[in-house]
Amino acid sequence: MKKVFMIIAVTGLLLSCGNNTKKESEEKASVEEFSEIAKNVVDSHNAKNSLDYKGEYKGKVPTASGEGMIVSITLSDSSFVKKVEYVGKKGGKFEEKGKYTWNAEGNTVILDGIKDAPNKYFVGENTLTQLDMDGNKITGANADMYILKK
Image (cartoon, rainbow, N blue to C red; front, top):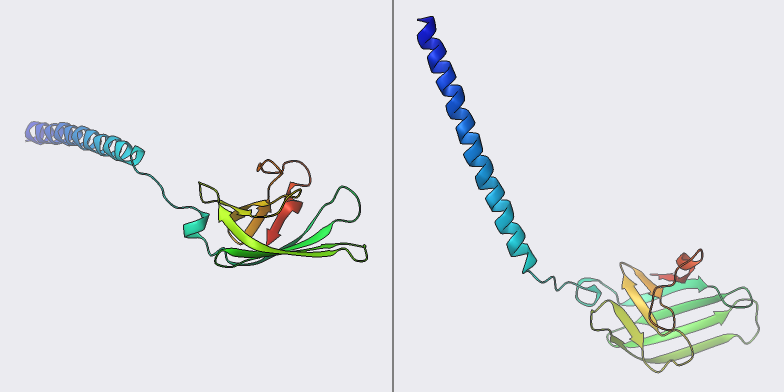
């Protein structure tokens, strides 16, 4: 009787191991198929179509000389209002209005008509990050100071 029980137990153990191998190979195949499908999926989400970007953004941005400037940018459907106030300077308030466009990737707004000053801003969740004159992110110790917040 012990031998019969032992044979049944060993047979059951061997059969259960064989099923795991089949299950593992099926799972591996499923992961590989999913990975192949995922390569062909294009993610069309960007700031323009995924974020609630309209509104007013404000922050204190450093300047080459002086104490910096308070920058406020309000984005509506396709127009902007940019207000700049130089800290500690009398008569240092300016306002510009115009239209803005999006870059091809849909993650950066370009304030049309602004020359000789940064006019590109990367759009994030409740933030506008000023880009340099070439449209690149500003790096370094003061990089966080170029982020305007909603």
